[in-house]
Image (tube, rainbow, N blue to C red):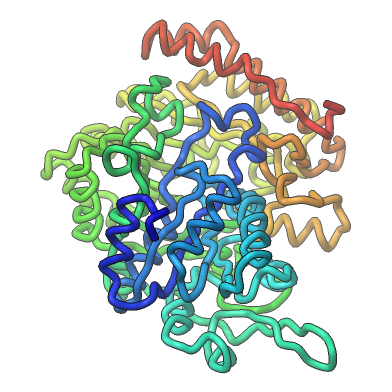
Amino acid sequence: MNNLPEFLRIYVSMTQRKLDVLLVNPDSSIKAYQGLAATYSAIEPPTWALLLASSCRAKGFGVAILDCDAEKLSLEQSVQRVIDINPRIVVFVVYGQNPNSGTTSMIGALSLAKALKEYTNYRIGFVGSHTSALPREVLAYSCVDIVFLNEGVYALHDLLSSNMQSDLRNIKGIGYNIFENGGVVPILNPPQCVVPQERMDIDLPGYAWDLLPYKDKPLDLYRAHFWHSEFDHAKRTPFAAIYTSLGCNFGCNFCMINIVNRNDNGNDVDASHSRGMRFWSPEWVGKEMNKLASMGVRTLRISDEMFFLNRKYYEPVLKQVIDSGFDFNMWAYSRVDTVRKDYLDLFKQAGVNWLALGVEAGNQVVRQEVAKGSFKEVNIRDVSNTISAAGIKIISNYIFGFPDDTLETMQQTLDLALELNNEMANMYPCQALPGSPMHQIARKNGWALPDSFEGYAFLSYECQPLPTRHLSAAQVLKFRDEAWQKYFTNPAYLNLVETRFGIQERKNIEDMTSIKLKRKLLGD
């Protein structure tokens, strides 16, 4: 135990019995982000590990968190840390807060799980979006003993209350292997429910911030997204992210967010079958924000997929922020068709200085096709201008390579991005992410899918987007990379950054654009 950092040594020494569960956040950053990992990619607190830890502690279980990403631990260091902590079970929490993160986090998770099995006999479980999407595939790895079939809250409670051996057949919401007739047979038990609305505050009672590693002060190993700190590296820590709600009411073809809500073990289940939102109370949100403010956090992400959707929930949260005098620099998500002009002043007053908009595509026909017609007809230019007029900065999200995309329609998307000239633009190649309806469509139609987890990482060397009906995957990826470079080196954009943020911030962006991604698909 002397090898543990002080914050963990103190916690473990206070535990009266052997630690029940170690929740692991693996490190996949180098392969996922290439040269951007060292400085420019964010390091986010492991939100679901924090929620699960708090939930388990409320039931009396001993919990610790190992954040390999934040501490940048080597494989050997990570294995030794697990041995020093010595839990009853090691659970890899592979969620992430970007849609593809649950899958790309499997890179580091499997690497560490295999090393642990080589040197130890710890029971190993996997929970997260990729596990929920493909539980049988994850269970097929010899280093994985148990999988959780949705968000895993109640299943984890029940597992920790069991002997983790003969009791497994009685625990809803898990999968495991049995040996039968000389072979390995995967078993998926009946599903367990997710935490219902009426028990959100009770069974997910908060975030276990005290279990996170730090160097000098809490949350100083975490850093905000580059643009969230207004392209100023000095403002990126301490940083935190919280949810005020879970899930989404929509079922876009390219999205897998709702797969962690699944309550059906069928092979054809995707995220669109378990859409829906659950909310914590404003009092719960205020309590968590107060904790973060007391720890010196100012840069805060609201991770809800649809924060700007239901004013019944966001209005009391924002008013509470104002009344409490919190000084957060926040960002939140909105669909382009749910922005309400009459509430933008409230957002700005509460400190929501950035809104992320899912523009997705410049061509209305392409956008409607992948959104199953759920997007209302809106003038995106008017929405952008309205938000900017309220003093709120915009992160526009674009996707290249939808099934109906051509070079012409992708150019329309790029032209729209250049015209809007928002303070930030995320540009993604379209992926059939596990758990999304598009992944099911791709499998049924025999479309080429990545043969590695790294292939699902948007910025990785092995990135392999979907081909369209008209373009190859390589054409899509090439267009995306060139579009990103054109946007961030565009003189109009750089002048905007210099005017809004400063000349040093402009230089910081220019330094970022000098880092070239290598792509296997493009012959690098």
